[in-house]
Image (cartoon, rainbow, N blue to C red; front, side):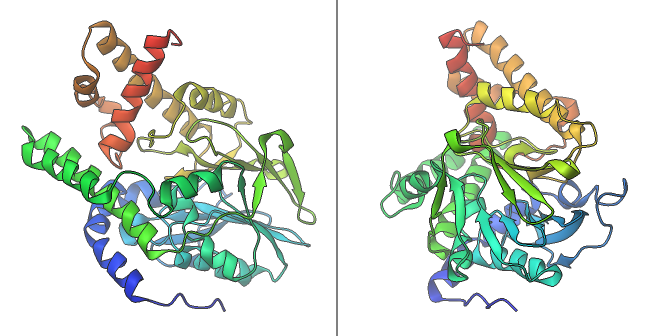
Length: 369
């Protein structure tokens, strides 16, 4: 059995500061969006191997498992992940938001196999994929990631990183107070909750850095686990540190946050031109391919097509506003969610919509789009 994660005063304070964010998450990640689509098709087990509410683990192939989060029921994991098991070793995918989330996935692995864990892999540097790394480190499990992941974690989550927290929070609180519409006020509240969640996540976890950096020039890297091969590849888009893991023999791909299924993507760190090229490449995979997205339910190629449509709509509306001479700050608020995407959660407007419009404006100005 895994060692329990102790509740320290620091983690207690961080957890209580997450309560508002947890209530927000129940709206930002509604249960139907996260839990639907497991049954049917025959590839995904209808019964979970493990289920803690905040996440469940399901078998999706021979020795291949998906960990799918439901943040409406808890914030231990937040992102999706999984693990791949062969006769000689296993590969864990994602560190999640907390050590408790990583512990849950490791315990699920141990329900089906006692083989050594070759590594735990972070698909990129964001807090909901890496701040549980401390659990893996305590177990002596090597942590692999893109070569840019560790430096980004230090720069963004390390001591003294980024603008002062009180100033950032005060700026958003002022937006809430000064909002001239209910929509603007709700967007600002969502931004505040997301920021508080990130701060609380960092405060409640020791930032544990990857100890093996994977250089893009060394990829793809094939990891033979004994009868099952996992292929690690690097594709740009969501962040400068993105990795995916393919199981070619079984048409399974763990995409990290290069795929948000059934929701608007987070774009703050994105290169949208590269991201759209990556999605175009994903769309060329076999129609039977099963994708494990960074967020949202498991899906086939239809999930890729939907996210491409989201980006197409963002680009189209941004282009029309740019050509009409609408200032950027106004354009970021004027984006109109089309009817076909009206039920898609938006984690936070300033993490998803605002940056996307800004990046498209930059591309238009540079003549790249």
